[in-house]
Image 1 (cartoon, rainbow, N blue to C red):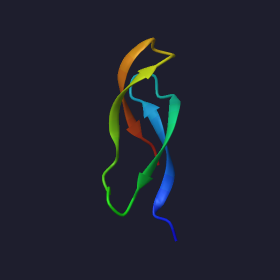
Image 2 (image 1 turned 90 degrees about the vertical axis):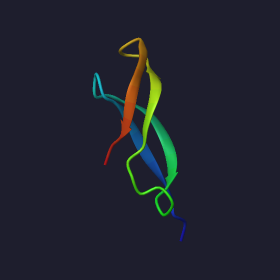
Image 3 (image 1 turned 180 degrees about the vertical axis):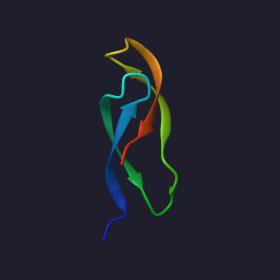
Image 4 (image 1 turned 120 degrees about the horizontal axis):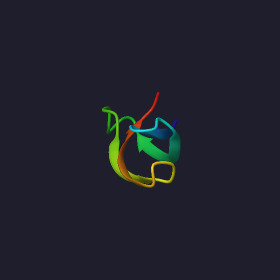
Length: 51
């Protein structure tokens, strides 16, 4: 069984889901946090992995 699962990445400012990504949950157990462009905030903002 594959350990890579699709995750949703949400903007921390406007709380909208903007991106989908893959994460190997066996290797990376912590939640992913990246600085991505948010088209709703019109700028770069930190994005966190949702449940």
